[in-house]
Length: 175
Image (tube, rainbow, N blue to C red; front, side):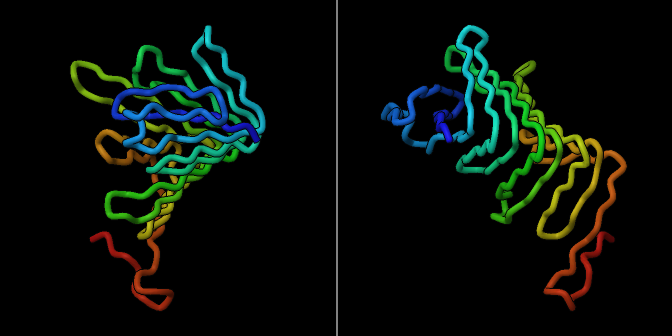
C-alpha cells in the first residue's frame, strides 16, 4: 500500500507527497489525515489525486474505506472542497455524544463551500445508503449528511429502531 499523508489544520491543508514526510511544527496541533491505497495518481496540474484499491482514510474524527476515491487538492492553503468515494463505501465516525455511527453506500460525495459567509459542508450518499446509529438503522436514497449543521436529511426513510437495554429491552420510541 502507498501512504500519502494529508495534513489538515483548521481551514488549511497541505500535501506531503513523500511517505516519510514530517509535518511542519504548526500543523502538528492536529494529527494528519492519512490515506492508504494500492495505487495513488496525483496530478499537480489538475490539483487532483485519485486513489484505487483498498482505499483507507484515517482521520481523528472518522475512518473511511472504499475501492476508489478522487480528491480535489486545495490550492493556496484552502479547505478541501470536493471528494468522491466509490464502491463499497464505509464510514465510521464518532458523534458529539461520543457514540459510533456507521454508514455504508455505493458512493459518497463530499462538498464544501462558503457562500455569503455561510459554510456548507455536506456528504451525499447514494447506492442503497444505510446509517446505523446506536439507536436505529435508517435506509434512505439519497442520504445527505450536513456536517456544518450536524444534521441528516432523509428521502423516504425507513427507520428501524434498535432495542435499548439489550435484546430483551423495549424498542426505542419516537413519540
